[in-house]
Length: 116
Image (tube, rainbow, N blue to C red; front, side, top):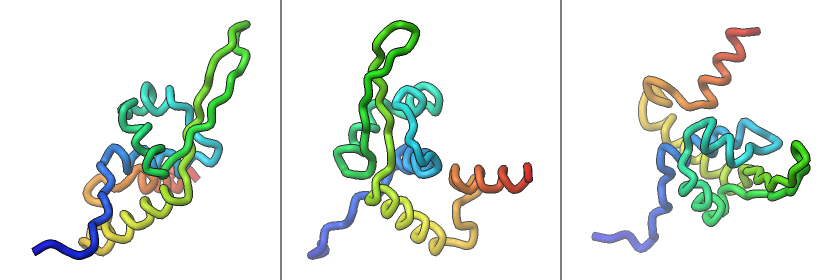
């Protein structure tokens, strides 16, 4: 039996990780850092933009005497809502909430409290 209402697509673990990183960076993150620094797929990022979960702001800057195009990725309000919906579903799914490892934001939050 099929439902009359289509199900919203779920975020993949990589998409969730990307949105968590973007949510923790109010000024955005460069595409290069997301791909090379965090190991995210360069093919996944345009999908987030097409889905309206992230946006890219492109700038041309002068670096080392050369013009360089820089793309900064930011999370959108829809991306924030998708991330929050995932947290609610995950938190109500079981006592452990985020699983054995937790989310990136959970680990960053814990790390901040250990340092302070």
